[in-house]
Length: 85
Image 1 (cartoon, rainbow, N blue to C red):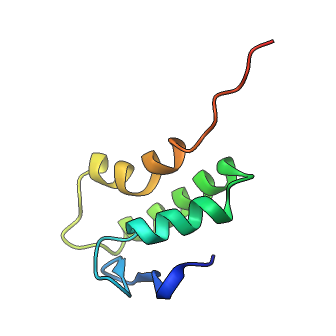
Image 2: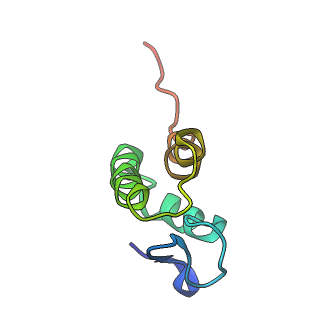
């Protein structure tokens, strides 16, 4: 994974090591979207794995809805609708 200026997760808090915001922060999301632009499904799978790691470490634990939006929903929103023929 490549991110600008070290926007990587600082574990176990899962905050950005560069800007201190919840990871994935906006710069990390932008970099991930570029890196996985040709394979959004793999990005979603990878983010699901990150969620699995984070849920065991983040304290206090966010709600399932918060975790879903933080780790998964933004990646799924990158999908381009398929054309129906």
